[in-house]
Length: 323
Image 1 (cartoon, rainbow, N blue to C red):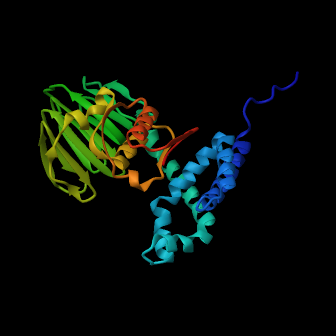
Image 2: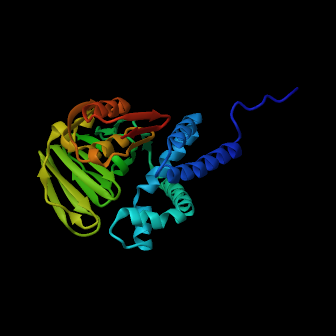
Image 3: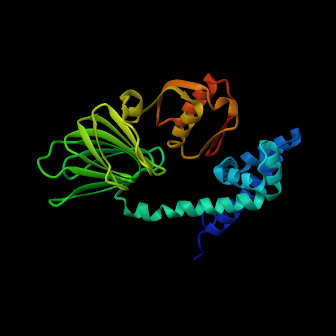
């Protein structure tokens, strides 16, 4: 009996292809600083030759435009002009970016303990409805991790990352407590949302009252219906007015923006798109956007944004580029 050949390349072959694609992507980033027409055609051919090429180029470009490289540029040269700084950085680009890729890869694995603690996980672009043992209803938004422990002694939920919308019924027993990074919310008979991303929490109250306690100090705040507050490493910001039509539009499966800079719109869209969305035209960053979109169709939203801003859009596997 003969063995059936595998339908997919072994992991070692895939890893080698990914490493080779990243190495080529780093070379292309340097070439594309001032490409000839022939080089531009060669790059387009390489980019579409394999999905791993587009993915590698997106990662490399995100790193190049990210804070790691900018900090190294400032260290290497304190000149005010970006061109001269980047010129000094170019010879160091490949080893610097390669190291950054490895670091970012390690960061992705650092989420593993958190994800193992979670009872419920959503992938990018997914929403999930839950009902807790006490009757509370929870809607998890994209890329979220959540767990709960509810019994006669405690009613505790934890949002490890992401966003959740809670509908908590009246309960004569213990209040429901939700831990989300720098804040703990204690609630009864309340409808509210919690968002916890990059060390910052945001609480938005639609109905009822929410008692908040900072996990870093004894500071406490009570929020009422129609209020919102941001909590960071330094504690509570001032409460702000909640706009349910925009702030909680995701609960209805929508993304709503009112005179919002395009760079902020794209940042929100990236949470729902399982790939990279990159804007290479700095002039588009502050263009004001107003619109009401379906959050389960982020690629269609990018196409619409390109149309209303007269931008060009290029689509590749797991990569969309606006310019």
